[in-house]
Image (cartoon, rainbow, N blue to C red; front, side, top):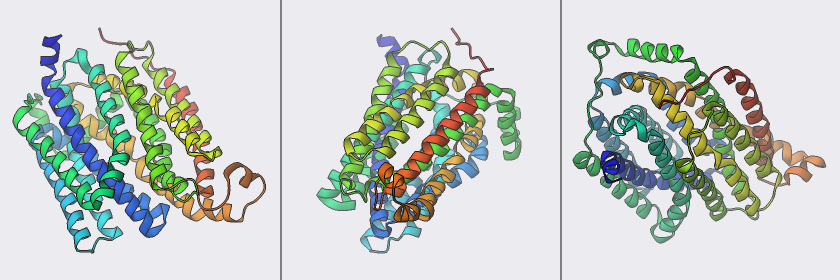
Length: 428
């Protein structure tokens, strides 16, 4: 046991400190989302924060993998973390000078997204390099566990720290967690070289991007799974854009309730991560991926939209988010086991562009539908619509969440038929 833990020592250090830094960053993002919604009352303007984060990430990811594969992984992660911290400092300065506005946040989120574009494939390859192959499922489960814990804690901690000292204390915590992750990576994590070929190091960015796409094209099973998750991400990101507009305006809603509802999503993911870490490898990972997403997207959206109480919303979040780590673990194992290590940076970057390009579209779609279509419709509606979705501000968001349930169900059923022809055999 001690030997296995020693083999994963670098992973444990990197995982724990990077997760801590991610918690600090997520707290800041949550606080700024509330700040902007309170200032504008617009679901679309609030959703644009996430659009600006993901747009550069999606547009540039396909080239970032080539840079990641040829650059030193540790140095890349350190530089990207530092520049992201500078963006946080810029937010702090803007708040102190009372100059911060929506377009400042959009610009800073775009810069953060650009940094994440380069850091994400580097970090994914690093996990492969410092984790024994037999521990891939364990590592994936722990990453899902930390992600779930962050989802649970960030709204509660952000609200508490904000009550104590406003945005100043939230940003201070963010910077302290960044410093912990920075020095842990700099001083205590040893990352072996990935062993890229001479030909790969001479590739242009365009040639490397083509190489990643070619590798995916040769692994049609992985490509089909990525495109399926693109459809899932469209629905999930639209839901995330709509949720504040659904909870905040309600009489029994508000900031505290939004924080609790968000936390229950994290509690469900935490339970799912713990379950994934102890379950044996499933016989059919592809079938599990499709089934879990079908259940998640229908149960959460339909129950959330048709109920009126925070307790029911929390139950909907549990049903929707518990299966997510089970899906993530199987998907991660398939990709890491199927794609050669020396190609993973390029492939992960191409995956990021293909799998996540729907996220900014989903955020914009969700916010636009609520502001322009659903809320105006519900303001004039009566009869069955009011019976199902309520009335007043927030009812338009409810009908939008209901629509997303049908879209999610359709995506899963279509791709379920496509993915039936593929089989993944577990390596022993």
